[in-house]
Image (cartoon, rainbow, N blue to C red; front, side, top):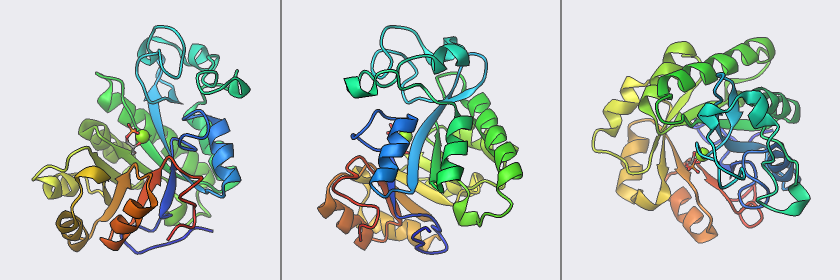
Length: 257
Ligand code: G3P
Ligand code: MG
């Protein structure tokens, strides 16, 4: 089912960013369905907590971009959020597309055999709680449904928030973790060791060939965001990058090599 690369990254190489990149409203089930139409069985999406502690898919803590109006995720209940229109901003054909819960997306992805990079995206001030709740929900789901799956089919958590990842490590140590860096700090190895992480995830624009070699030599998976040009994608793969997410699922296919 999946294209496996190596033991440091037993996951698909090309991952649809936020569901289907720029081809459908991000972080919705419509995006996941769009990704499937393009042959993608690997997805990255962002998860945040509602005011009542339910993990839902959302990138921005404040409304105004994908959700019209003003307000915030952390002060809205899950019922309120899941009734909101998360599709109209993208195009009228997506009007009424809802904010999905993590639970709905876990069910959809399991059913469709879609691998998940679950990015834990806490609203400010909710770092540890978000890591804990997302890990607990995922752990509970896979305890029930994941017994027949290989490790490569289990999801991978990632986050820019180290406290969120620490909480996820504590709550669900069996679910692999990747540490997200916008810029890779000098002490990246110590951070990965402390979190017992499987992979380092970084903005591809700050990655160099030398750093890629160091990360791979240390025995970690190496994942980049968000790679939208085929030429750059080829360069990164030649440096030893194991996988990347892309917004251009129409140009960089799931079988890109
Ligand atoms: O997980 C990779 C990427 O999604 C991180 O950035 O802002 O798109 O969530 P962002
Ligand atoms: Mg993300």
